[in-house]
Length: 370
Image 1 (cartoon, rainbow, N blue to C red):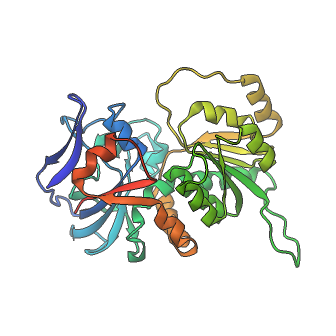
Image 2: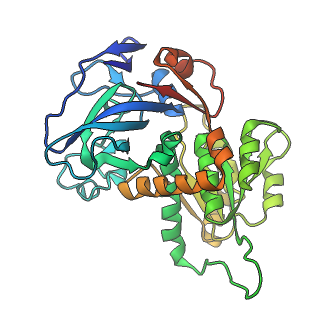
Image 3: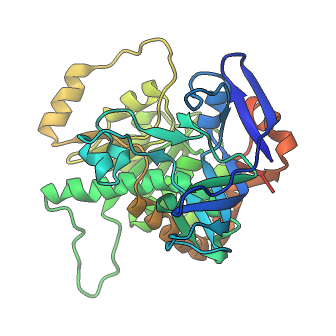
């Protein structure tokens, strides 16, 4: 079978030929991979900023945003059956008995750092024509989502972040007041930094959760990303026309900032404008750049006096994947054109090099694997 792999030692990116995998355990599932999304992580691995092959191997098959079809199951598989569509999980638990997170199937909170990740860290990924994996990492997807199911994995970032927001905000009275005989208005305001796929999906999740949602990104209007946001009822602001100060003045008290850029300077400048009782969610991992100056006195003062919370989040557990599947169906029903517009194009495996190392274009590009 064919697979797309990097060889970090020689800094090569190729389509390679591998033996087609077969089931060797009664709980394993064999998948015919349908497609894989290309994201910033894949591009960074192909720039050899990180990415670790499995132990004893020189090559790493990349790809972690995926959709597959079950073509065979082991004798003890009960979660899925042949013909089902599934999105596999990415992060896998460490093997330390004392890691309570991994022993509780919450490897997204692994204490040891010895987790592995398909297509990223010490396990081959999903940009291959066939994959064999354990059933416990399979997430069932309804056929109605087949054309957009590759978006499930990036949506889990927002789903996990919001799940933590709801837990944290139990600390204070935070519900929206209900006024009899009056239409319910937004009472929480969110700013999304970045209008890539993670940012746009995050905006959809926030609008769906009844946040008045603003997205701040570089591109001037008009542009396709702003058009998507208009379709879902979010507001787009360009860095070319609005400073962060102007954005904050427009929004008012900012209850939530969802960072989806990996740009540390922008993120720490934005923290200054987080509102009273607000939460700032980091999802991006910045590359190694020059240090940025931060007003730590102001940040500390605001965190204390305004009861603010700042946290980072990495995806994701089973409940988060299931929430992502559920909400993607809601998004598709509510905003079909917007959701379809997130996928810019589908390409053959032979186009991998331009997608992975060429100039980034579009919103979400997808590689067809079969």
